[in-house]
Length: 180
Image 1 (cartoon, rainbow, N blue to C red):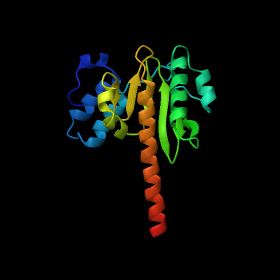
Image 2 (image 1 turned 90 degrees about the vertical axis):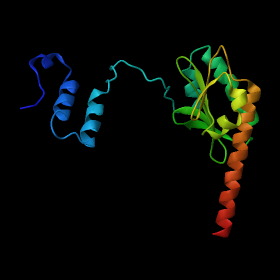
Image 3 (image 1 turned 45 degrees about the vertical axis):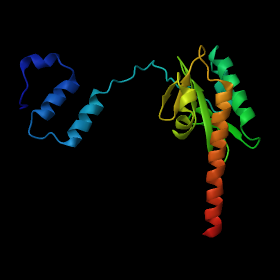
Image 4 (image 1 turned 120 degrees about the horizontal axis):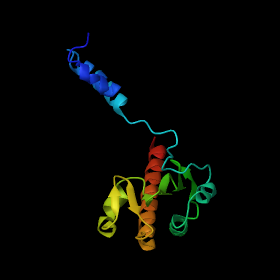
């Protein structure tokens, strides 16, 4: 019999009952805590849609974006294309439009309430912190809206910064191969 179980507990969710059963018995190990967390996660309704747009190509991705975000991302795309070297390749990476040049350069995406630029790491965000004041940033994300878009000049600086970083890494790799 479970200890700590009361008759009025029958109204509780099964996960809560399991939690009480696990943690009122002598064993309250790490595995039980992980199991409890997994059980208590809210399941997504079957009709819930992902915030990410799924597409096999960049053109297909843009076909699925509604206005006004479409116009904004088209400007972001044109700015990146202009700032990136001619050899940069446009592709889908992590489910988002991306540019690659000697590795990942930048990704960008549209979400329901904002757009984002992903400079593939924290380095560029730290480098341009003063200019990014007023924009929400996270570990590797710069968020902006249609009402407050990222300036084209800042996107250009970020792309050129990433190009320089990727070229530097490529030179280091080439040098290591020659020595090794």
